[in-house]
Image 1 (tube, rainbow, N blue to C red):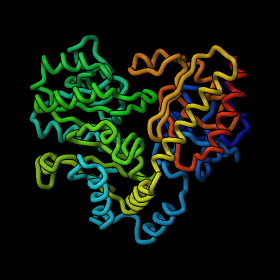
Image 2: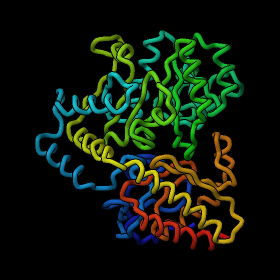
Image 3: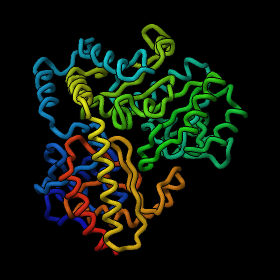
Length: 434
């Protein structure tokens, strides 16, 4: 493991931050606790790069954890933000931009007939869950181990000790009563899902799932798994919620649901639809969405929901990703990256188990001999090897997610030359790790 000098600007900023902010960061993964060392404080970004407080440039493969799909500081997005800001930062009243955003989301995601804008992915999933419970009059929900749906109390849950036991809180401050209705199952386990619905299907309000998981690294749902989920929810009158906060507009223009051909009842979106500013949304069938206040009994509100500056960034980003060939190029870049990294590991002549996978503009790196399909499979990967690789690549000027269990992202600005530079750096790193 390497670290910055105690005299570096990064180290000084981190020391200062820890005096006034818990752990020195405003979101836990930024603290480098999983990999060790000193987090980099970013001063500016452009295209596929960002620069830290010491002026070092990195090829950025987190892209603000997904939103920077068109690259950092895209001139059209920046211009849209500047123009919107000049008209006023927030009004607490409706704007045309909110209408345009809702129309665009409904047009691009056919399963969404109506949509409500919010400010974070956590708000979106939390509200979708409340709507599902309000619509069905049921309390029980199903989620899957390894899927992260934000930090709402009922979703911060780990698996129970048996198939039909409910989850236990994974965070301090979450009462057991808040998660007693949350059942945690294994991702990609069709048989288990069928057993649970057979036992208690008529009391299940909803199933919430990441159709492409990104918070236990990149793990793809099997078509059989999602089809079974849709069939069982329909049979038992449960609401199927796709959490596409991360994969929505990332893996394809219509999201993962378009790739898989599965129609959820509700969808949570975020990240890309804000273009780097805080916009998220939840939406679905009109019949369900009509149960939301002010016309229905399910309450949700937010002072900054549909913020005009954030909506301007999101609308411009949604326009850019619809340019001809955008997703073909994005997917090709991600494929080139994972192929290059795997070749780098092989050419280094080491026996280090390593593989990688990609879908759309997302990718995963695994220090194992096969791509995992479950949370348990991901947990079996070599975390120590990943940490070594992470710091060595950081020294080479390549910034991957600072945790072994997070997906990575490419932008449309990650061209062949940038990815070739990354692969060359990885070859040097793998040779040193032998």
